[in-house]
Length: 193
Image 1: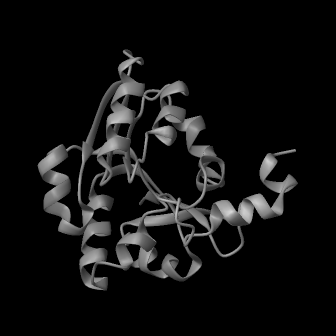
Image 2 (image 1 turned 180 degrees about the vertical axis):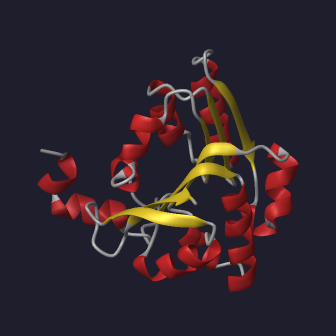
């Protein structure tokens, strides 16, 4: 049985966004819950993880056969950690960059050019950007990230943000949604039409 169901108090503390020691909301297993079907499609794929933290999710894709993993995060020490981890994974082309997503699509393009990816991940990031960006700028950023996805776009966030995602990803069809990990915190996958 997974640890998160054994100790509700521990899970509540880990998920408390106001806890002073939390830079990242959730833990790897919970943030990725409901999106793991994409691992079955990872072999030979390119993956872009927006808000990659220390590269944990990218690592899962790498050990499942992804050939290229790129990621960005605003937290420099996390990016250094991801670079270090992936330096020991020489068969995977990797690139991790510090990017301030609040600066919009141009910040992503400066770091990664016009690169497109088989799978784009936006896991546990949208709610943070909502605090600092206007709705129109956030939609513009999500639309831009959508143009980088050749096949799949995966997301984890809050239920009230799902409509914004559907709107921004109008060239995609939502093919999966799950609230297995936490009610009100769905994971969703869109596929390019």
